[in-house]
Amino acid sequence: QVQLVQSGAEVKKSGSSVKVSCKASGGTFSNNIDMIGWMRQAPGQGLEWMGGVIPVYGIATYAQKFQDRVRITADESTGTTYMELSGLRSEDTAVYFCAGGLDSRGWGYDWWGQGTLVTVSS
Amino acid sequence: QSALTQPRSVSGSPGQSVTISCTGTSSDVGGYNYVSWYQHHPGKAPKLMIYDVTRRPSGVPDRFSASKSGNTASLTISGLQAEDESDYYCCSYAGSYTLLFGGGTKLTVL
Figure 1 (spheres, each protein chain N blue to C red):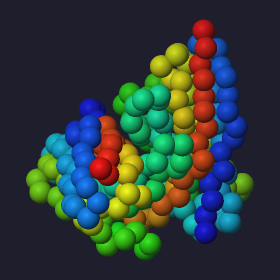
Figure 2 (figure 1 turned 135 degrees about the horizontal axis):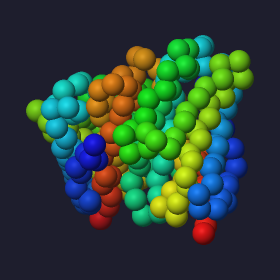
Figure 3 (figure 1 turned 90 degrees about the vertical axis):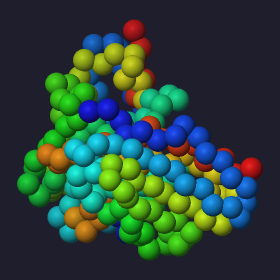
Figure 4 (figure 1 turned 90 degrees about the horizontal axis):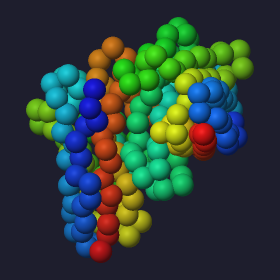
């Protein structure tokens, strides 16, 4: 059973960057997870896909909205993925989730992290 | 890319059936058979309920079913139970290794 454990809550200033980690326990990416996605949920809003990475290839893709500000990476040796968001503004205050899935799930994410609250203050 | 369109809320009484729609375009919902549905209780991690338009992961009750017609996908929950009260999100592959979520639907069990 794969578990994804995210780093703790962050409080950041406008204009700065935040880097959230997500570690897979119970195995490395190559054995258990074919793709990783990062989503966020702002207060009172819905889930929003920010981008994802296929760990074995190290290929990351991003939603157009975040293309210029987000970077997602995966370290297969430690089973950890990172999401870095730059140019933070108050609207980026949200809970950020990582999630993982298998090819056989057709882009569905079976496993989710617990969420990381990022608060952006001016 | 705009979010997929879902009704903001739906409701039903215990034992009844409800259907949640998810409308996109030919570039996402209509173009691929990669629609998934998530149940999300606030404060918890979302749970995958449906993938590949109609498939249920093991452990998901068969009261949950889904389909797609054209650019609209649908999730039907039959035999509503109190524990089904939650937020539900559709998600579709949108090409070029990208995904798109719907705006979410709040299901109230009356």
